[in-house]
Image (tube, rainbow, N blue to C red):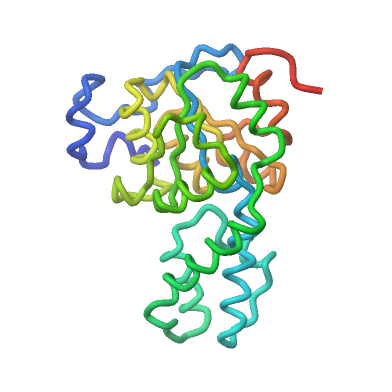
Length: 252
C-alpha cells in the first residue's frame, strides 16, 4: 500500500519543510545503500543493536507457559518478533480464548529488565560497525523509550546516538506503518531518501518501504527470504555493514 500518500498528515510532519504531504514512492529516488549517498542511518533496536529478541521472547514464552498456555521461545519469536507487546498479548489472549491478568504486560517488562541486566549482549560486530559509520545515527523502535535506554546502557551503545532514540510510543503509531521512520528522519533533519534503515523484522522492513526509505535486512536470526520478499537487501553479519554502506571493505 502507498501509506505515505493516503494517510492523514500528523502535526509533526507539518512542521517540516520537506513537502506539504507525506512523500509518496514516486517522489523519492531509489538508490543503492552501497554508494553511501545517505546522510543518516536509522537502526532498529531489538535484534539489530542488542540481542534482546531471543531473551525477551524467552521471558514472554516462560510467563505465558506458567499461566497454563504452553508456548516455546521459538514459537514466541516466530509469532511476535518486532511487534508491540500489547499486540502480542492480544494474540495470546485470542489463542487462549481467555484474558490475561490486567498487570501482565507490566510483569513481563519487569522480568525482561531483570534478564537483560544479567544476560543482554550487543549484537556481534555492531560496535565495530557503529564506530566505522561517520554519519548521523539514530534508533527507532516499536519498544518504549525506557526499554531502549536500558538495553543500550547495558550494552554501552548509547554513546553512538547522542540521545537520538525514537519510540513508536512517542509517535503513537507502530511499525509496519511508516510514521516512526518518517518521524526519525524529521528529527535528524534529513529527507527520507537521504536515510537508510537497518532492520531485522518483516514489520520493520514494511515500515521502511512504506516510508520510501531504503532498507537493509539483518538476517542472522531472521529468514532472508522473508525480509527480501518485503523489500529488504539482506546481510548476515554486522561486520558486513560498513561495506554495504560503501564505507570500506568488510571487517575480517
